[in-house]
Length: 460
Ligand SMILES: Nc1ncnc2c1ncn2[C@@H]1O[C@H](COP(=O)(O)OP(=O)(O)OP(=O)(O)O)[C@@H](O)[C@H]1O
Ligand SMILES: [Mg+2]
Image (cartoon, rainbow, N blue to C red; front, top):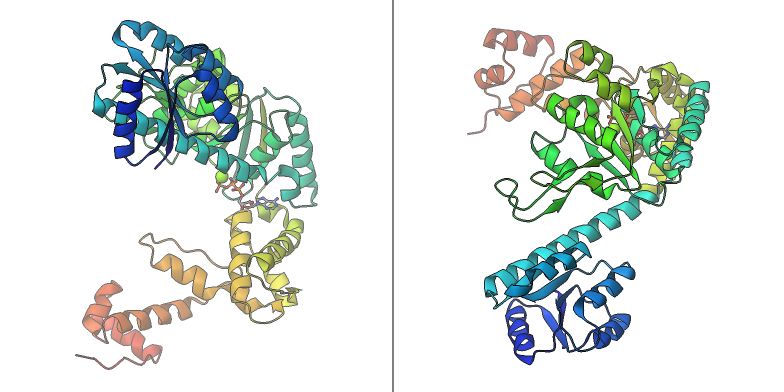
């Protein structure tokens, strides 16, 4: 349900529209003049306005201009006669969302209104998310005192000051690429404008293209209404292309053109849309290698890579490990309402010695789980080694890929525990347990004996 304001001097039209929209469950107000409408807006903003062109006094277009001047994002749908479609086009240029033609087609009215409301809702969501993200303002979030981190800070400050320079951030997974991208944005003159991100590996072609550039109604099956691309939303702000190495080569050419022309067209569109945005891209892949393999365009690489930085893996700046661990400990103490005072000495040693293939994200997750499960005043070796959570969790993913937790693991313990689990699942049926483990029944029998595993009694 939404609130709709109808501004029309024709009583018949007001009544028809009111009836249709109230039947859809909307709350409808009607007014006869633009002047009345303007003063009503001061008190309360509707979710949508249906607006006639010809009004006594101020006309519809003028009123529309007033609304847009106030920077309002209320969608306005114009009411127009068939003869007057060209002024509807003018209105759309001024920022009207759509128009409906007299004589009315009732289905078209409800559909247009619904689309406008859906779109407004989406815009509001985006604005909300944007605000949420603005809370994390860059530098304070980046923890570290190693000389590598100092270099990163210096880099951020330098490129933040040149708001058009494209930036390429390279580094292994979890090294803080996104964090650096945000810090650049929020320390630049673009800070009050949107930071829009897209993960190129999250969309399959041609969805990625539609997300980037948007599309016009009818551009392809399913494109019912025009949709703005993320690039448009990033106007005057920063556009963060994460996992750029995953973008296919065709789209790479289109992106290159956008950077060169600073404009683009929506899918199925003819209008050139100007866009002023700084492009920051990130990748955990070796792009130069991809160029050699002909899966990444060299020209694009040069364009994206005007300034570039490679974030070091955590194992190369071990001096920051404990600092980060304590930072995350404070963070999760607050989040889980705990008051763990610090790390136990053996936990410190373990954290410092681990090689952290998942880098800072892995460390963060490790501390999160440890804080959650710790029952004493200090994070113990036991809660950090996470034999249970880290190893078991991955085993039941179908991928055969295991992480070794910071404290190392006992292979024998894992083997034993898996055999016990398999026997448990199968109610002690050794044939099925062996199948689950993809070993022969003989092997299973042998191991049961070797590990002195108790086979659960078969339940029927
Ligand atoms: N120097 C740092 N100080 C504090 N937190 C950090 C730091 N670097 C990274 N983090 C945190 O580690 C996590 C991973 O960082 P981020 O998402 O920026 O990494 P990434 O390089 O983009 O990873 P991926 O390649 O997997 O997308 C985030 O939660 C981030 O807040
Ligand atoms: Mg990332």
